[in-house]
Structures are given as C-alpha cells and as structure tokens.
Length: 246
Image 1 (cartoon, rainbow, N blue to C red):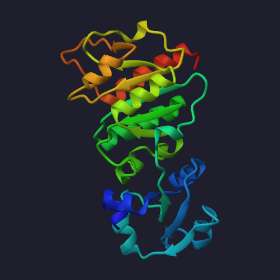
Image 2 (image 1 turned 90 degrees about the vertical axis):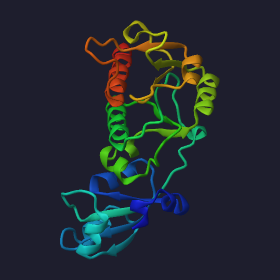
Image 3 (image 1 turned 90 degrees about the horizontal axis):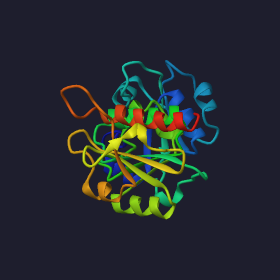
C-alpha cells in the first residue's frame, strides 16, 4: 500500500496507516478520525474490529495482504486508515506556563519515536519539530513512538517561524549546544520554557543559538562531546519537570 511506503501518497490523500489496537485507540483519543479498519478474520473478528470505531468502514483482508501491510513481527491482525492533522503552530493549544520541547531536523524515526515517548511520559505541553526531515506519519515513526505520536500536542514549522512563535508568546528559549553555553542545571525552567535540541552530527543551527535566552550544555566526562538526541532531550525535560515539582 502506498500509504505505508510513500510520503507523497500520505500527503496527497491526507491519510496514513496505523497498525495495532492500542495505537488505533490512542489515535482516536488524540482526536484522529479513523476512516477505515482493515482486519484479518483469522486473528480478530469483525465484531471485535468494529468495537474500535463505530463510524469506520470495516474491510476484511487476506493473510497475504496483511503481511504486506504489517510492519511488526508480532501480529494483532488489525490496521486502520486515519486522517492526518495539519500539525500547524497556530493550532497548538498551550496553557499559561507551557513546557515545550523543540527538536530541529531530527532524521531517524527511532529517535523521533523515543522523543515522543519521553514527551508523553513527562506530559509536556507540546513537541515542535523544526525543519522536519521526514513525514511524521511515516509508519516507522508511528511504530517507534508506540502511539505517542497521537498522545502529544505536536506541531511542525521552519526555524524562523518557530522562533517567532515562541517569542510572541514570551516563551524562554534554552538551546542545547556546545557553543557559549552554561550548565543546563543552573537555569530556571519554572516559567514558560522551550528546550531546544539538534542532531548529534551537526547540532543546532546558528539561528537558534543567536536567538536563545540562554545556550545550555549537559556536562560530559567521557571521550566524546555529544549524546543521542533523545537521551539529551530526556535529561533536559526531566530537570525542568523536577524544578516544577513534576
């Protein structure tokens, strides 16, 4: 199915594929509209499949079709076609004192999935992806996030748009970078805060560093000067949560 393989097809149709009962349930809780449910009758009955959505069209598929569509080694026998969201900055619903994570140009689906899982665990107000390198509805991201793509408040945009958005809302910008930085643990994250992380290979672009309220660094004592972006994000997020009394 092109929805599984091609970002262009997902964008043209405004739909994407979800695999697994828990993920489908989380998508619905996150406000996603389920259009179609595909089920393998040898594993799940039509009645059970129908319980996941009362409005979706139910389509029985063969084992051969299911194996072509499913990504997982373990099968649940159910997939869904859902409508995408625009993920625009203007639609972000933020509280009075938001804690936001911004990730600039993350490439690996596994890292994006891990970031979203951490964001869900910390109950962040939003996750913003700057200059996304991949379609967030890529099945690898849906899978690696174990449904947290649907539980988080997510938006995308380019760096300039996001910096303007944060400044207009008086949200302090703390950029994790090696240059001109101070220890992350020395800063106050109890007011409206955006924690910004870049890739391991190139770090954050100059535009972020120039517009930061403060550049911050996670001190390291080993031979290398960087760590996995999802790990770095987790350290910063939970320091902020600690300061806020969780």
